[in-house]
Length: 383
Image 1 (spheres, rainbow, N blue to C red):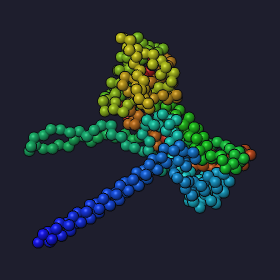
Image 2: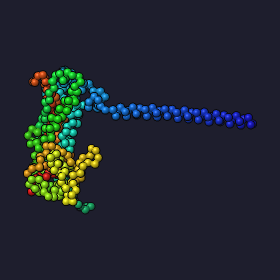
Image 3: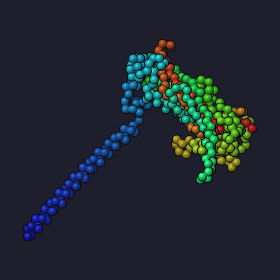
Image 4: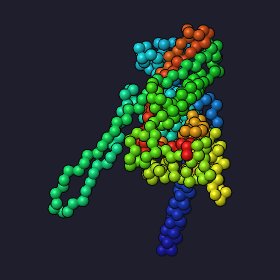
């Protein structure tokens, strides 16, 4: 009997040891798996933190797509139209060849950084030049009734049509054939940068002061009025005077505060100041009656400077401080100004006009107009 008990106890001990060994083996396997995952994450993290050395497009994609390679090496560098036709579907009757979307996206990114109004406004992509939008200028009427009372018809809302004037924006940079033959020359980055700079200069000016003839209608070219939102015609911008015919009066804070509060509270969420650097240099010197500066620098890197709590955006196309000028705008441009553009940039390669240089004629159709005139307010230099 004692022998049987000892045998059972010994068998149970062996089972316990076996289970412990199996558990230890599973734990070791799990630790090995965890270590392998950590090693993979470390490799991915190190690769992501390395600086890009092959330019913006190479950093965005591990290797250029066949479309980009054919466009850059075949058409832009050597003018081989057959290669670009076969991969883009473009035809000569279109007046050029569509830029691959990697390069087109790069152009749009640089435009946003250079042209401040583009980064603030509402941008829509259109397929044709005839973009139109309906705006409700009066809400649907309502009324109170009893449980069993009749429901008379209410007034219908009123609408206004917005059709942003547009024009064809173009740039025509040139490069020598020797530059194009040099494989080290980053052609796609150069082309995107040159086109972006040319487009941004024209856009920045047109979105602010364009006359609407074969170009966008700038917000400063829209009708203006001293009347408030309740009585002002739709499409005209409200302004207030600065209190001085040559600049700011002795109490500039009150004028700027009045300008802020002429705007409806809903539009003030997301509003910003727009002025050029010369005007900003004067605004930064303005003080309240107790000696505090109105302008406040951004406290965190990348955070915009603020005036009366709202961000300040520099747009060099805004006018300087002068009599009858509108040097300062305050508005929610996402709601107040619309940019309508045809997204595909067209490029025509011209190696014949100015030999030995090869021109790249890039075009894009862009339009713009005030969308909601209640969302943008202006300060005019006048008594």
